[in-house]
Image 1 (tube, rainbow over the protein chains, first blue to last red):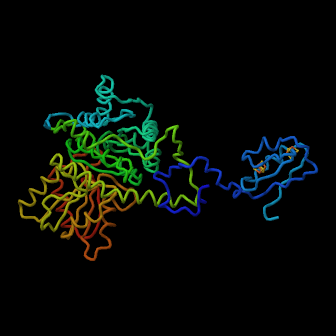
Image 2: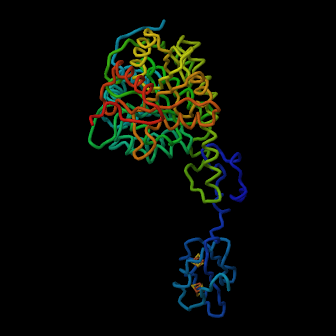
Image 3: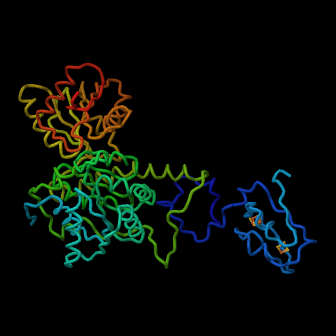
Amino acid sequence: MAKPEHEITWKELNVGCVIDEPGNAAAYRTGDWRSQRPVYNKDRCIRCGTCYIFCPDMAIKILADGYIEHDLYYCKGCGICVEECPTDAITMVDEEE
Amino acid sequence: MATRVGMEVSIAAAEAVKQANVDVIAAYPITPQTHIVEHLSEVVNNGELDAEFIPVESEHSAMSVCTGSSAAGARSFTCTSSQGLALMSEIVYITSSLRLPILMLLANRSLSGPLSIWNDHTDVMSIRDCGWIQVFVENGQEVYDHVFIGYRVAEDRNVLLPFMVNLDGFVLTHVIEPIEFLDQEIVDRYLPPYQPKYSLHPDHPVTMGAFATPALYTETKKAQTESLTEAMPYVLKAWQEFGDMTGRYYHPVETYKTEGAKVVLVTQGSLSETATLAIDSLQGAGEPVGLVKIRLWRPFPFEEFKEAVAGADLVVVMDRAISYGGPGGPLASEIRSALYAQEKRPRIVNFIAGIAGRDVAPEDFVHMIQQAQERPGEWYELYGVRE
Ligand code: SF4
Ligand code: SF4
């Protein structure tokens, strides 16, 4: 995976900042944008997968047993999963908490 | 053998683009650049040049098309003037940041308003910091030559930057001059096919024009400004090799009778030829006055310039654009900062002249120099303005 962007020196950039490594956007931590994070209550979850479909960052993984897991490296804290979950199994808390 | 032909400069410029065997031409006609584009559409239409001629709906699209085609590895050409440049300016900056070796001829014309179609340098000065290599030419031969030189420099793997040739609208574009044409085999030898370092191709996918966060943007700008500064030796090399081939040598800063000159006049573009007549008449009258012409505007040739004016007590700079509410003209600003750190610094006086096609005759240069000699201090004024 590519070097984290805050470590790249100007001499290491390709001519014209061309990116020649496919898929290296995966290295970008959109989780840095977050001011609130989702908290998952497995007991309320009915394994419908709605949150997984709606998450704009594909930051929700469906596990083998059908329950879900948030990937906080990418979750940018938009709260859409909270809004869409039919059973209120996800809530948002401030990052500091 | 090279042949010498009397021809309108715009047509000669278009013929050079044809000889440079470009792959894509995207341009929108605008006065006074029109004849260049018209002639190119003819040579493509009648099969003299195997290229895509894309009649875009605006200059913004012209530069966008060239950016895309150059990114795909095609030798790409456009030309414009004034408002056209203003409209395409958004993409002009992107092209240099993507390091795409596009050639643009800019037929210099004043920016509106008031609406004016005549010649000055307000258009190019509005995008001075766009990151392109920028040269000024004086006559038709220099325009013709710089089409080849431009691509040669731009496409050099050590450079990979877009190249802009500034030629004065009407006074250069629309005059008939003797042009020495190069044989095609000489052009082909000097300008081999473009071999891009990166190009858009499905077999080797790359991303061009990605975004950069604050964590990286500064590094991208450092790389970009270094690329322009570091282009200098390759510009010099291309000029040297062109000179060895044709006998026509070009330099970042060119001097005319500056030996022993205590007063130096500084000009850019085609008015430099008129200025030589003023220098001749002043030297005839025993005045130690010489002329320095700035051919290379970016990267700015600081060392060459300092050397050229080393013996002068007074530097009279003629600008053809104004920095409203600022220190005068952009050329004079540059020259002041170039000389600021010198221990012995000449007095610098700035005239803004020849705005929107107002004639500047040899007598006007004589008058400017005399005024600068008589009136002490450092100042600027709009030459010949009616009070
Ligand atoms: S808060 Fe937004 S980004 Fe994070 S998991 Fe939920 S939907 Fe995805
Ligand atoms: S939307 Fe709610 S109930 Fe459905 S899978 Fe996601 S967390 Fe579970």
